Image (tube, rainbow, N blue to C red):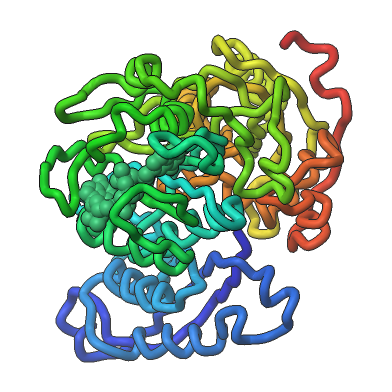
Length: 486
Ligand SMILES: Nc1ncnc2c1ncn2[C@@H]1O[C@H](COP(=O)(O)OP(=O)(O)OP(=O)(O)O)[C@@H](O)[C@H]1O
Ligand SMILES: Nc1nc2c(c(=O)[nH]1)N=C(CO)CN2
C-alpha cells in the first residue's frame, strides 16, 4: 500500500515513570508511517483526496505536549489512534524515541514502535443472518429488472449479496398454458435485518419494479420470495419459513442447487435440494441461460449451450464458518506470489508444484519473474503470478494458499487475486483482491501472462497504466521456470 512518512518530529513533553519526568519536559521524537491509497490524489492533485501531513505533524506535537503518560508505549498508541481518525488511513506505524531517557549506562536512543490497523472487516457477528431469496418475473424487460433487483437487495440496510445463481428460463409453473416463460434466479445474502424486515424490503423492491399484487398467481414483473432464513421453520402466514412451496419448485431448486451444491431445505419437506430437484415435476422445464448474467451485456439474449459456463461461487457461511465449497466444474483463478527472500524463485516453484498437485487443480499459466524495488528500506521483492483452473471455492483456495505459505516457509505471500465468477467482500475472502487493482507488482506480471486479462471488468493494461508503483517494477526473466523441475 502507498505510504506517507513523517520522520523526526520533535517536541518536549512530560512523560515517564520517574517523578522528575512528571515535572520536567524532555525531548520526544516521533516517526510515523501512514499506509493509504494515494492513487486518487495522484490523479486529482487535490489535498482532499489524501491526508494533510502538516495536520498529522501538528497532532503528534499536541500529543507529545499534552496529557502525561508514564510509558512511551502509551504515547505511541495515542498517536497511532489519532492518525487512524483520518478515514483514508488504513494502517499507522508509529515510533516514539526518547533520546534523553533516564538510563544509567551510555546509550544512543530508546524507542518503541506500534502498528495499528483500521478495523475494515465487517466481522460476522451473531446478529448476521443468512437468507436465500428466489427471484422471478415474466413481464417487461425481465433481465434488467432482475439485475436491478440484485443491486437493490444488496443496497438494503446491512445486507450483502454473497452469491448469485445462474439465470434460468422456466416454464410458467401452475399457470395457464400460454403464460409467458419466466426468468428465475436465486441469491444468497448476509443481513442484519430480521426476517420480517427483509421481507418488507423485498416487497418495496417488488413494488418499485411495477409489481402489482393480486389474489391469484398471475404474470408479474418481479417476485421476490424468502426461501430460507437461518434455517428457521415458521408457519406464520405473513412469513412462512422455509417458503411453503419451495420444496416442489424446480424453478427455485435448480438455481439454488447451482449456487450451492450442498444446499439443504429444512422443515416439513426437509432434504437435500439436489434430491428435491430430482423429484420435482417441473425439473425438465427449467433451462440455464447464463451464469454471468449480472455482468455480460447480452447475457441471456441467447441460450448458452455446451459452452464453458460455470456455477458462480457460493460464498455462504454456515454456523459462522466458511463452508468448504466443492464445485463440480472448474473455474479460472489468478494467484499472485511475492517474496523478499533471496530464495524467492525456489519458493515460487515449490508453491506452484503444491498448488498444481491438489486434485482438480491445473496450472494454466505462469508469468515472467519480476523484481520490485521497495522505497522504505525494506528488502526488495520478487513477484510473479500464476493462473490455474480449479474446482475449489474461493474461501477454500485462500485457506489452502495459507497452508502452502506455511509449508514452503516464511517470506512467501500467496494471494488469490481474482476468480472467475466470484465477487466477495467477506473479511477473510475478498475477491477480487482489492489491493491488486493498483499494484504493479501484480498487474505487470499478470498482463505479461495474459494480455487480455481483466480485473473487476477493467482491463489490467488500463489498471497498470494508472498504478502508482509502475516505476518500482521490472521484468527479471522470462524463463525462470525452465531449467528447474516443476
Ligand atoms: N417466505 C415467504 N416469502 C415471501 N412472501 C411470503 C413468505 N411467506 C409468506 N409470505 C406471504 O405471502 C404473501 C403473498 O406473497 P406473493 O404475492 O409474493 O405470493 P406469490 O408470489 O403470488 O406466490 P408464491 O408465494 O407462491 O410464490 C405475502 O404478502 C407474504 O406476506
Ligand atoms: N416458472 C415459474 N413459474 C411460477 C413462478 C416463477 O417464478 N417461475 N412463480 C409463481 C408464483 O410466484 C408461479 N409460477
